[in-house]
Image 1: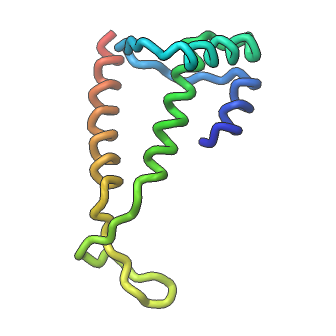
Image 2 (image 1 turned 60 degrees about the vertical axis):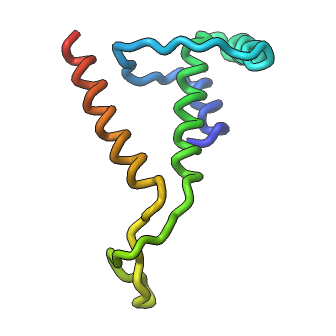
Length: 112
């Protein structure tokens, strides 16, 4: 999701399930001021909801920005018959860790 899409979602006021855990952060004054400005621009959203949505969008962009690093193992071929190598960069590890933590967090949520 891009930030433009996030702005549109805020206009439509959709939200998904939340974890059982809370995460506490102290923000620099400039970022806190921007959050409060957004909360005033989108009165259907709390500051906490804005933080959640912004963080989610930022994490998606971080994952998308991780560079592909060709490994040694050929996993397929492209349309021209050239080899496609496994990704030896951060992306596969990040995806695996994300799946592991998601299972753990969902299990914690289901215990409630």
